[in-house]
Length: 625
Image (tube, rainbow, N blue to C red; front, side, top):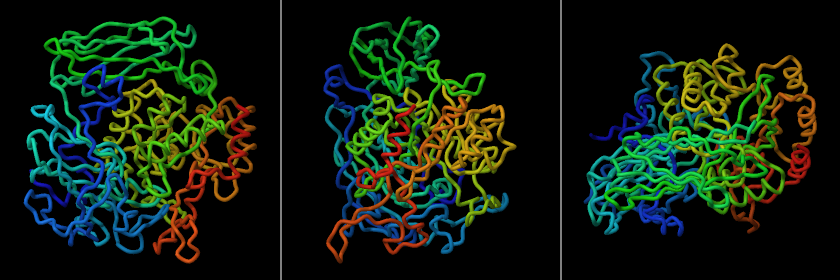
């Protein structure tokens, strides 16, 4: 297959040869590697890559991916990083508009009719910057003969991949991993991996988030070697009955090749085994729900985790060892429309959190995550909404371990197609109910679910942010209900299209609704609990008035609390050329336009992770419930 630049213009093409999404479990060669925390089946490709930047597709280096291509004019770039923060491209921040609004005329493909294909919209776009990446690598000796995949954890916004001159695949969806099989074209030595990254494609219509608009390979890149028998997907079911404090465990595995057996051990928090069994192909690699008796429940105050270990054996030899934490909890809405966790009313004291580092943009570090969790604990924050995309995989593991309730959001925001200069005008809205945009948003829901399904911290799936509503988002809701009845589904944008209310969202949700209006809903025999997916917009020294919302918790059991907008400023620290002092810069400070200036400075933390005065208000009121 040959790569086509026209895929950038076509919403029906969003993955080519990209492997299906699957659980994010780790796998190790043996128990010793597991205990050391380092898998010999994983090789990082982070570091220095050869790189060339182009202002648009017309001037990009063509055929740079060929093994013997002349790349003498290439420079280098660090991976992971943002292209714009490496001084290759214009830094730009924008909120509701699209980056090209007022500069380049575009409308989403098929939004003006079935014959409107928007050909050339991005493949010939004069504003569509391109990054060409090349990295050479050798295979470890003990990998030779094994299947090998490459995993890109995050690439903005559309990517083409080649290995040793052969086209491997294409992917969009910037914030979920893209995995490709390299095996057919691998060499033991001198492999040439090439990646072409375009800042814009039809995915740009769906990723119109309120943030700095970056591009490039901004998360980890890894090679994965698959043992002869490998668990490619793992699904854990861990129902919990709060009435008798008892739990069950069920498993469903998918293997690349049959093994002799998979040994299963579940240990309690003290490390004592409470279940030991094995699965075979005759079991179809499934463990039906197994009664465990009394278990300890997982919650914010006591994030109790049990340790599941799977050991895959073929021909008498261990092929891999897989660790997976298990948390037992039950989340539901009762007959009185009250949100319940483990049989008790749940109050969300949450924040919205962009991934942000004032020097690295969204290419954040593990240390940033640990610092954020410390701030959560110090200020009575018990929940986080992953606004407005899936986060780095490590964040979900940390929230499991720290007892942080998660609203796991899809990578979907399209307010630029229906919210125009403050008015609701959905004439070219996507995804809406357009059939050509259906599969791409269902795929985003599927990827979010399959990747993260085993994390006890996730209580709610979110269908995205500010994308209006229509049949396509209703079908996303139906996907989650079909595949995961153990969790609840949230979507705020249905408030604009009440005709979809019965098909979308388990919650009533309306951003920044005044407390008096929330009370009017709650006092009128509500059929859905009310959750604040965004409230208390924290610009300047704000969040004064949080007490008015907090009062609703005591007055109305159907009130869930919510997620403050937001946790951390999006600003970039620079050295001021006049004063020589460090300063934070926002939208419009980089000679960019369409910026809403300091509108992204609405966190309860400064961009350098120093607390703002407003956080004192948060700590006080969040500490009351």
